[in-house]
Amino acid sequence: MNIFLGIIGPFGIIGLSLVYLALLFYTLKMVFKNENGINMFFWVLLVLFFPFIGSIVYFIKLFSTKAN
Image (cartoon, rainbow, N blue to C red; front, side):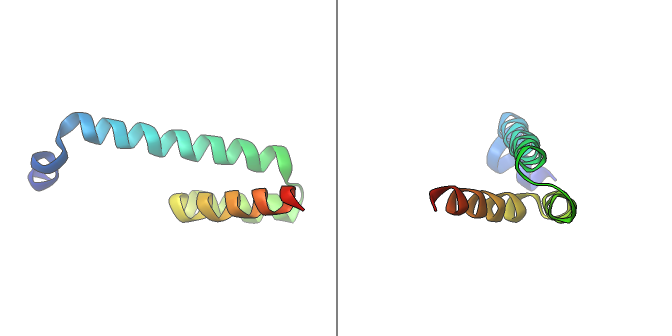
């Protein structure tokens, strides 16, 4: 743990935590707004278990379907 504190510092950790939480909550908000049924269940599980990858994949899917 001291290695990470020495590299980015406590404010970096707080900042990254805030970015993580904002990304998680915004993605979940978009999932609840745009999906329904089993698709919503799948996306919520994906975002909760793999937050960064799940969020990126969901936004790629969301913006590619809105473009068509």
